[in-house]
Image (cartoon, rainbow, N blue to C red; front, side, top):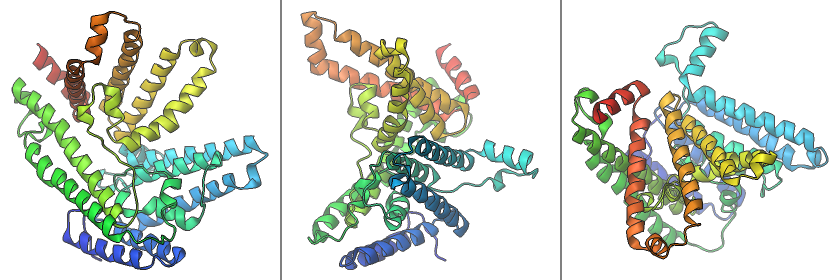
Length: 418
């Protein structure tokens, strides 16, 4: 079977054209069109170098389980049995989170194989399923919205297309079920030319970011420097830190542009994932513009549920800023853990959580200031640009935490500061 990397290989684009043509030509019948998309997406995913039939079958079985749970929660079975619905949805979410953790974190797999099944494993035996992070988040969203009885156009075929839609399978964006499935109906208007024009333009922008701009800065990125990091000068470290921030943006935003453009050519709109994050005046606005689909998911399914839970505490309900800050910090620690299993990712999440909490307190105090000159400064373009510079530096400094284990980070900061 032919294998190819998404967006890198000519074979991908040839296969993509074939899928687009079939999907567009079958627009006369929704079932046939969506069945073709489902099969086409699975074949495209199977062509990924590190994705095999076993991985596909496992994800398919997990998807079928999730759909069954969602179907039960959306039916009348639990309409009058709220406790049972909470138990079923909670159990499904625990299973999905456990599955995600098992396949994402090598430490859990090593412990499982060595202590439970008593089998020695090495790094080569660690199982990783491409797309498991985003697929799991989509499934958790589906279960929660099913429990709330908010799922529309419920069908197994729609759900499988939602999970396996290949342009968004590897790295998102994390779209929502209802928004995606309402686009799978037969469309009377023919927007092929407009969709193709807009989609191709977006793909070109993405390719330029991912393969030109990211390549230009990649040689300056701190983790790509030759030799020991401790031998670099302070200047090299700072340039490497800024270069890594730009590289992450060009690489990930470029991928998102390609994914959105490819979906657009097929007539599917995916949610925006980046909105000029490095031109935002504070870290809150930056995170509202960086990996936006993940930020919204964490806000909806971690921050707000936790905030509502904490609000039941009488003392915390009287201190909304403290309540919000606790929820922010926990949410970003979870965000850090989602990015990787090393302890530096937890610290990275804590770093951003504390930064957002300080901003929360600052904004509350700023609203109390009545000094005329201070109010004019807050509204001036100088304040905006000072905020942009400080925000970018805060984010870039966090890249050091994101990039290195804590021992290396401690030694590096000690050398730079002292």
